Length: 327
Image (cartoon, rainbow, N blue to C red; front, side):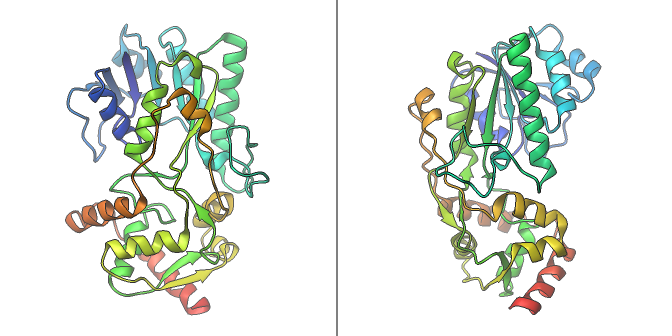
């Protein structure tokens, strides 16, 4: 197939584009450049800004695609641009949404694609829901060939799974310095982390699949961990036994609203996913990289690239204050 990745070098999309190439597909990347990850060998890079329709149209020229995967659409205005660009140009348009859109706390276990979407705490998730609604309308009214995919906390070797965003290395440095670290709640809520290479196996299997049109899928690991286990696995990979201090999520939200939005709207609640729908279309899908191995990859990467993510003195100081109050 001829496949276009909008992005293609991000945490999730880098593994997807690489796997698509390995499977023999003709892969194009539409990107502005500047990503810390290089384009995979064999990909054809189109330099353009998808936020600027004229720039994107110039980069795409008269190319048409069997599938377009959009990893960087975050609000309805981005979907409007995509509808204008890819109606008649793509046989399938895949929107990357988020499993954070599912209503939490969950009323019925496990989470399936039929679980209601609702998130009053996190604007990011509400925007993703609005994007899905716009695409569903386009599918129903104009036959736009959309597919929605909802990842849930997918990581690669560069992403430490700690909130707030871009503070993971700060948490790791505290562990290495034998300083206690903050864990939200009592650390026993259940969470799912998915390695990006595992995610790619399910995702690429949906590309060009006629039964995926008009449908929604999440793609996650089946491994379920508590947050206490997640922090401990990272510490173990770094050769330390971390000291965990538990702080109520609503207290964190008051002290750091950005951090709190992702907790109250998502990570403070337990999640268990049912991937049956995906496996019906991609029967060979299995997520077989446990987080214990993923944590080793992450720690090894940061040992070799300590400047990849900047330290966050503000988060470090906030953790000290929270630990003083709750430790």
